[in-house]
Image 1 (cartoon, rainbow, N blue to C red):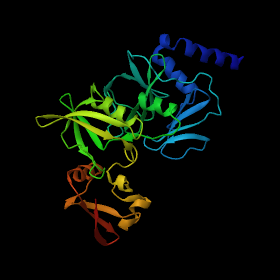
Image 2 (image 1 turned 135 degrees about the vertical axis):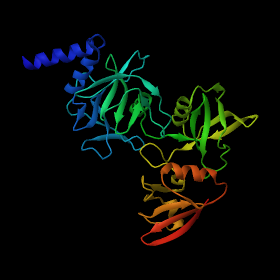
Image 3 (image 1 turned 180 degrees about the vertical axis):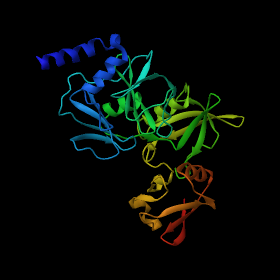
Image 4 (image 1 turned 60 degrees about the horizontal axis):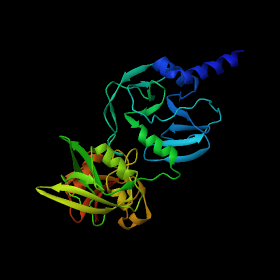
Length: 326
């Protein structure tokens, strides 16, 4: 009888979640074990779970997004009423965990892999962002919120990858402005402060949509991008390449050369193409072109100002040395 009661309860939660509001969504979150030990493990369709985890989960992994620390794994619990991604206009949202429902709205949308979404209310990690019908609008992880478009794409694609045209953009006074441009990407035509007007013949609305369209496009595809540079309007033709940094991966443009860092500027990965620089794991980046490094953002901004080559100052133990990259 108890099992029958639970089954009927789950059925009612799914049939009448829109009427039951966010409290019904909180109960569904609890019953589905979506949040366990402060870890998100959201049941989705076809007996799978969507996980956010900084470490490899103890489960059969179907696919992994290292940029956003997402995993899709088999669901041995086989929860019968999985969460779905909301595909309709949301009239309201709430960040929900096992104890708290925090109603609010998204103030700023996620701009690619570098600027995450901003909610109107303080959020508790870990939580899921739902509408009143218990459909997913996003997930709340430590320090950041990942929006539904990125979750939906991750669930749909077979192999995780993102496209890159060598720029990072921001919104400034309702304009889409190039913040930094990758100096190591061959024939990169963009310059800092270029204003993005159109993508492939269509006016772009904001940085969030523009970066999402680029990231989700096919790697190797050609884009026509109309920009305004000073007083001139130009149309640039650019071919996308594979994105190699961003999100929970370091994004300093040096990843393009095969060198990856942690948040404290220590080298954590050296690819084969970077062996020529004779660097070692644990080397610490201290400065670039005579400017000191304090954060990942510093590296991006300083490198973006360089035209041909950059001189990197590293420390290995008590020894300091320069490496020139171009």
